Length: 107
Image (cartoon, rainbow, N blue to C red; front, side):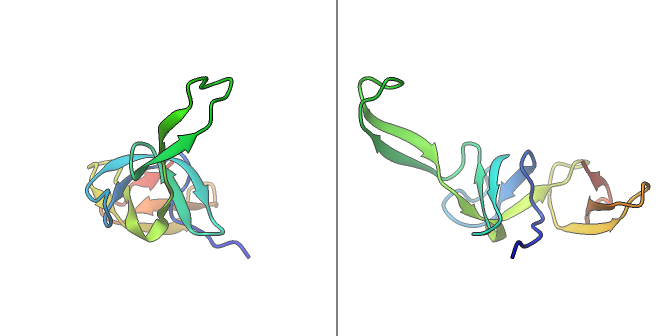
């Protein structure tokens, strides 16, 4: 069973809770099963890596960890501030997302 999420890959989001609070970034991936998203440059964690062809030295690398969807809000395309999301029928008769603050459609 997949749940319809208000955030998609490529969206600009604002973190509203957790250690990364008040940070913003682009969504790199979304996991609808676990309701989590990976946001560029937010919720960084260190990961130990064995030496390999890509990284012959090995050691620690910094990587983004997933954040729960409920801790993210989409940025309004008009004002750039966090906003809630609504759904309505667009001009072409398809369901589109829109920003509740400005009424602007989200591409």
